Image (cartoon, rainbow, N blue to C red; front, side):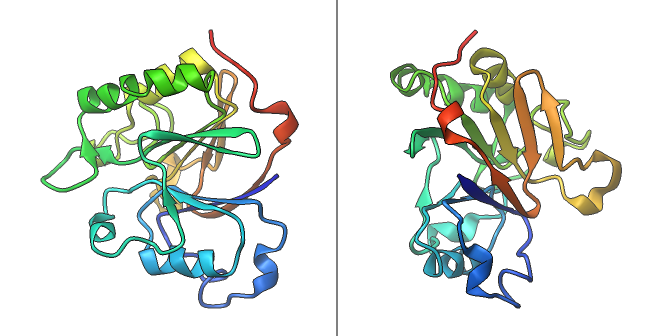
Length: 207
């Protein structure tokens, strides 16, 4: 399965210099947030693959102009070809505005997923906007990661944790790929193409 990951900044090669062949073979598109809804709608127009998204902290406009042809998977588990994707968007609360949460609030969101996690016997991919606490995050409040994401990785050992929010231009804090225990962490800044073997996913995994 080929998964196209998008986050934070529109990729010129997919928008300004688009060619339909660039989406050839893509089975799933995952957006980590902070992207123009028109951009996601454009991508959805040229692929038959599902386009799933969670919100970034700058996605307040989605309330009036949601991305057309795309599906928000906030606070739910979406299953595609047996691959279970858990969506928890947003950033740390640093000012008034939508899609921002305290550590306590994000933990509460994760706890509310208990029944769905039990029914699906865990999940394979955590799709988020923010990173996990102390794992490639930053010390400033807006870019601090969530403790709840560490807890989810510890308990369910998903194969992948996909996020954005920490840009490549931020320097040393940016890492495209890293590892936390059994989970591969991917920063989807602009775009990243992930190839996974779905036959090895979709299996119950819980400590």
